[in-house]
Amino acid sequence: MACPRAKDKCGWDLTCSIPDGPVVRVEVKGVSSSKPAVLLTRNEYRSAMEDPGWVLAVVTRALTAPSVTIFSPGEVEAAAIPYVYRADFSGGA
Image 1 (cartoon, rainbow, N blue to C red):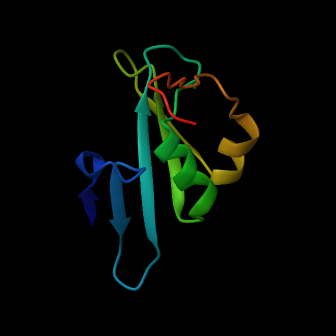
Image 2 (spheres, rainbow, N blue to C red):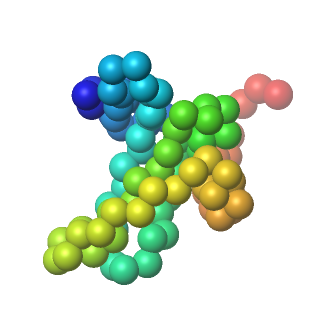
């Protein structure tokens, strides 16, 4: 069974389970190229680091010949690099 969760902004798109089986939280990303390179939000990365039941499903060639590759939290951690930073200049310390 899969339950959509993207609108909840919890760090994954689907919660999947089978009776008496593990619960897997799946973040899904799609790219048009054959290279599985994606951007993750802070919430998605946090979920990957904190939740061993989290996986990343990357759909490559999403518009022509879709192929899905699943990445574990460890693989995400090894491949992730800081890319975007937020600078808040609204005041305060």
